[in-house]
Amino acid sequence: MFDCFLGIGYSGAQTPLTRLKGLQVYAARPGLRGAQRWDCPQTDSRSECLNWNRREVAERLRDEVLQGTRFLAGMDHGFSMPVSHFGRHQLDAWPAFLNHFLAHWPTHEDRVGVDAVRRRLLQQQRNSAWGAAQQDAPGEALRLTERWTVSARSVFLFDVHGVAAKAAHAGIPWLKWLRDEVGNRLHFWPFDGWQLPTDKSVIVEVHPSIFRRRYPRERRESDEHDAYATARWMADMAARGALEACFQPPLTPMERDVAELEGWMLGVR
Image (tube, rainbow, N blue to C red; front, side, top):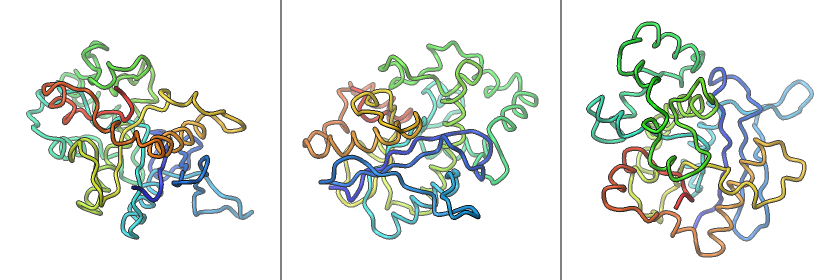
């Protein structure tokens, strides 16, 4: 069904051009055991591979789509905001959310980091909806898919556990960038539909803690292992014939309507 399964451990630290140890990419291929690390194409003066930056990861995904590779990529960051955010800003669909988000959080620009944008917004708009969102009660700030897990953090909780919040606010603009670059050749699940397409690459949100313990860590760092486990799990589910069922979580019609705005983490059932 897919040429490869990509696990992408994401990081929202610093800027899109910063090379980050926490940004890892692993690929698993049908019929082959395990997953292999994708090295950044750039090397240093000693011909050693460098860490990825966010721009390079997005460009590599774009290039794979344009070359005709059909992949399933699981990315470890939130793709959207709670449904209350949509109501507050009168947004009726995910594409409208992406446009609105980018107007406030241009974290895809070369020298723009999440921390700098957040400081500016909190200073200039402390009493606005964006500022108020930071004060939401944790339960109110959770998306439905996050409530269905025991460990997922809100995309708003910077000061409690900033890794998840930073990754979401750094990664969402790159989803729009990819969408603009390749058009309908890329399927963002579930926003573009719950059914698994047969002729497109697919990008999904994942939460690696769900399946990281299924596979021995060996000598991998935690960020590496999360990316490895993501790729390996998706390939394993495909080999078992169980992958398509993961794209159809048992949601009520009302829950499905919410998830079509908020997004859903593959494997959460």
